[in-house]
Image (cartoon, rainbow, N blue to C red; front, side):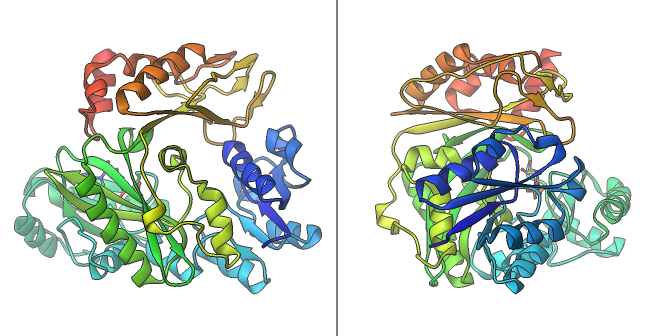
Length: 447
Ligand code: ADP
């Protein structure tokens, strides 16, 4: 087992990882920018190292500084959290070259999944159902038209290097295709330095359902069920639940089984998430994330298993603590992402939190790094905390969520809490009847 883990992240996820390390009796080092000197994870860690000024590229993305911090403190492993360097293959390779363990998959697996064309090809080869579309990159317009005619309109043009919902263009008819192809390519080139794009069928009313998987590091793979993350705004997840209200136990075990086998066949190690669109009973792979997800706590709530403990175990060569048959799904869990944003316009609302009071009681978990008097720096993303609620079934979970939202107080800044208070009272949400466009339509109506 590791002696000392360096946590290369900030905010709620840095604290989340720190908690797991403490439970496992592992020493912790955190790195932070000058803007985060007062952060909770810095206060609670055994050691901290300031690695640079506020902009991420000079601190949380600065590989040299982070490796130097490992050397100075003698850390033998790095947990990257999500975002920042968590899906940076070069970072994983550099750590390996310094004999420091990257708590995540190999650089090669990160590389494959970071290239969406390669990821889709790999998924298909592993027997995972994919969205119908081009086999690889599409450059020429004639070929694009031929493929689009074959799969049928509407189609979506996606950047191979895309991420965070960027670099996608929909073409409703053949007349839109030329412009969509050109704009997608030039946007992808400008944003990612790679203008490779591909085409796939645009699904009209899908749900976003993702499967949590784990490779044990010895060639075995398991799944931890799915999460439904269909409630999104601008392709950003807002509310996530496990299990999905749309799946039954049979569908869960079918898609979970396919994913677990694929992970084993790939020789993948550590946590991963295989993301699908789901429509009319069919799953369509869109991408795989090779890291811990923001929404992992809903899976922890229904399985009772600490996924960060498992990541650390696997990375240290100790394998998983559970086998597939030990993983049971109990009740229902929902996560609300509390962002420092205006609940209607979603413009960021940094500033000082004058009062912070979190709900408690049975089935409630709040993961947050903020506190009363904390000043939210304007440099990073606006997530200030996550409320995760568990109940024996979805109805009980929703009742408890409504009560928890009533108790939650964040003064001094605007947050997305009022949006969630509206959503828990909505009939479609109560029925679990929504797709990936539901929230944007709802917000447009409210305006
Ligand atoms: P990113 O890496 O940028 O998040 P994804 O491939 O995961 O890109 O897609 C993000 C979102 O875009 C999906 O959750 C879905 O809302 C939408 N999307 C992607 N592909 C399609 C598709 N073929 N049909 C309909 N919507 C899609």
